[in-house]
Length: 211
Image (cartoon, rainbow, N blue to C red; front, side, top):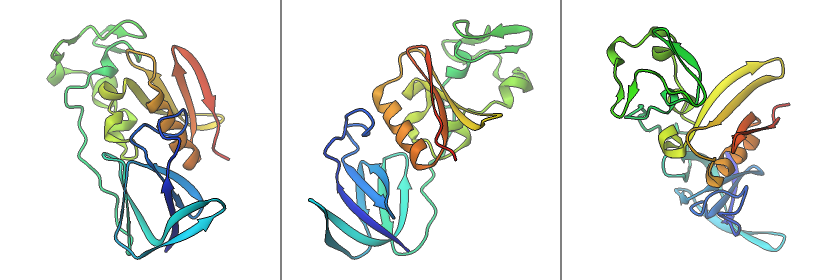
């Protein structure tokens, strides 16, 4: 069972402190998480920590990444995992990544030859590699919020490996990365000890969190 301290996020919406919706700070055994809503299904009490007063409780945390809701319960449970699909998102085809489809190359600034206003024009006959085998991290994992889908967040997250370890590569997809996207990403990466490389207005930056 874990110890939780919960208090208001006075700096929500500022760089590195989540979006305007992240109004709560939740500390699990001293590790900070930012949340839009907090629900307690366990007994709670008030507890002072320096000048700050906290809602304190013990239990197990569930995170709904789609709504940013943290729920504390008395027994371990799996996180809520909404179903994920591309659902019309074609950011991977629109000239932000690189590859070749049926002899036609696509790359930065050059969309796939077969993508149109209604999506892939050869979806049924699309090549196995890279098209059928490709999954961005939003689609293949469940740790990125639902609003991180590339057509909503305007970023594509990939997982790569090199001599320095595993990295999350975040490329802009159609516009400069929004500060709310970057804030969420950097806080999550720090909490989970993940290395990140990311673009800001086309320039590359990196943070190495893994030991």
